[in-house]
Length: 79
Image (tube, rainbow, N blue to C red; front, side):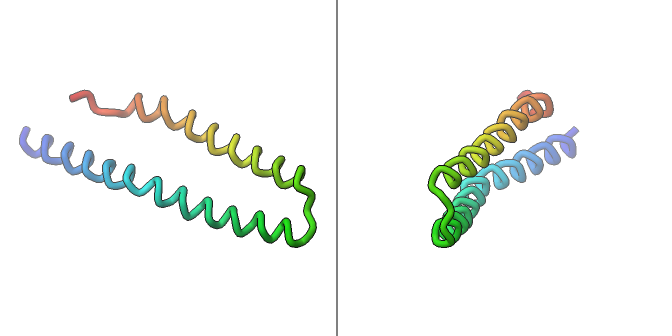
């Protein structure tokens, strides 16, 4: 019984560390997107085209976030 509790605490700690790392990953992703958009702009892409691409990217991120929530709720441990 104690072994199971220990494993649950270890799993919770791993998930906590992973959750703390998500903002850093999003920051790095945003910085790379900024570089990509700067290059597109420098090469002469229209602003409307860049905005359209950015909206599509944000929709993709929102969709992945919305799909993650039910899965996370399903597999969360009730304490």
